[in-house]
Length: 285
Picture 1 (cartoon, rainbow, N blue to C red):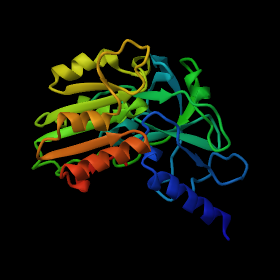
Picture 2 (picture 1 turned 180 degrees about the horizontal axis):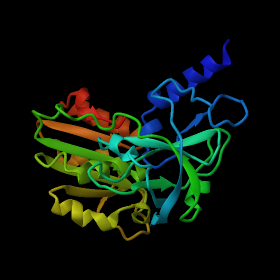
Picture 3 (picture 1 turned 135 degrees about the horizontal axis):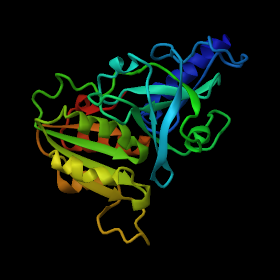
């Protein structure tokens, strides 16, 4: 067997066969550059999806705590690179200088916002298949890194929602990253928008300071905590798909999702139960 071919198949399954592969907005998902070869800046990615990354040396602009286990990080893209960021939900690859593995991170800021790219990145340990994110989340402003060009289709909603009145947004954990980008880009300004935003505990919920802004823009926000015991949480509990089911799914609805595989499958089941066409359950890859 061709080992390079095997790598291509393996990563194609990782990238497309699992909803979590690209949808965990700030969770690292990796690709191996050139199999087991020595590190090389010219190595190509064998991954079975998307273009090869073009790396640019950049640095961290700022880093701060966003929630328990989550960091808000900014990176200024190279001149002209932001022009390719046109659709909420697009992502970039980020790696240490010259590293073989790169993480995939959705851009949290809006395509309409000039300046630095913003990211919400989950703290993850290194493993056999992943560099983790500690090298980045434990860093300081000025850390040198390499970032790819903007990649992926993002949430492909242009022309798809013409006959839709209601859009339900589902996000858990760092999956709020591309969903935030959708809301703040105002592409849904003519729709009735409801966000179901889940986390294990209130302390693990990022962007709480932005919720009032989202509400003022017309978004109904339902925060859901799955492990409320001992937290003093008085809001909705359980899972985001269950909160949406309890509230009722309006007719002429579409659903945008970003989060772990179990949540995505639960939302798809809810869509099937309530008559939402599976083509209107839209992910950001």
